[in-house]
Each structure stands twice: as structure tokens, then as C-alpha cells.
Length: 246
Image (cartoon, rainbow, N blue to C red; front, top):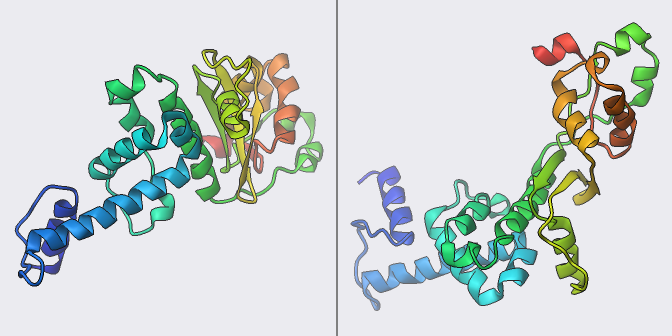
């Protein structure tokens, strides 16, 4: 058995898919010894998911969350040895469990919201947007400029008011909370913290359009939103329309 084959077999066994392993019985039987590793593996990943999804855990309750987290750990094992970036697809796990998603339909969107924040803090920083770079251009040149999104910024759209729910859980203030309403947000990471801003339909259209559409092709309503979004750190260094297409 090669080292790679042994590693694959051991990883599968930890995920409750037993494979032949050259483990000798000692004070404990081989299967008991593997079970110790499996328990540690599951507990470690469950604790990691609790750190990534604290508000989702609070919404579902710890016992329920732990059960879902254990299931997720078995179905979606880490792809690297770095647990700091573990936790993707947890919202998909929630959606696939009718006994969870049907009574608490907003839980998957709350989890997606929490993971989006983690993903942004892990993203590389972009060069800051400099408004002076646009001001130095002629009107004709400005019309050919595209505004790429900051790597640490993301448009987040949901059928639920996830930021309101997140805040209500954080403050334990649920009076007047209405979750069943659409929400569009700009999430921006800065110094390991994520800020979010409520957006209107014009903001959303600009964020979807600006990275690949020159300013000269935007409507007046969209152009009026560009400076507002720039103040939110939505954009990075401007490019020409030609560069954006490349």
C-alpha cells in the first residue's frame, strides 16, 4: 500500500466509510482506535463550523446545529489541512435537509450570509479606488472607463432580510423583525471586519454592470450611484473598456 493510498483509505474511514487499514490491535481494538480519531475529526470540524456560523448556530439551537455540522463534516470533508477556510457549502447542506429547511427556511440564507463574510476576509486586497484617477481624464476618456469590483467587496442578494436577522440575533432584539422580505447588500471587508450597506435597485444594476461596461454606456440613474458605491469601497483601480474585455 502506497502512502497516498493509505492516506485516502484513512480519510475515507474517518468519514465513516471503512477501508482496509494496516492497524494492529493493541490495548484497544483497531476499530476502537480509529473511532477515537473519527470522534476527534468530527468534533474539530463541528467546532470550526460553530466559529464560522455563530448566528446560524444560535438560530437553530446548538443541538440541532451540531447534528447538521456532523453530517456536513462527513459529506464535505476539508480539501486542505487549513481549517480556517473550512465551511463552504454549509448552506447547501441545510437546504438538502427538509426537516431543517422547512421549519426554518431562512437558515440557509443566513448561513450563506455568514460564509460570504468569511470568504471576503480571506480574499486578497485590491488596490484602492482613486477618484483622482478619473478626474484626471478627459470626458471622452472617462466614458471608456470600467470600474472593477474590489476583491473584498461582494453584492449579496437574498429573499430574506438576513442582515436584520443577523443583527437581531446579535443583540437579542427581535421585536418588529420582518425576515420574509428581499434584501440587497454590499459586503465589504476591511481590516478583517466586514461592513454591509443596504442597496437600492440602481445600486444593484451598477454593481452588476460596471465591471464590464464603460461609464459612457450607463444610464443617468446608474451614474448617480457610482460615487455612492465608490464611497462604500465597492470598486478598485479603474480600467479601460478594452482592458476589461481582455
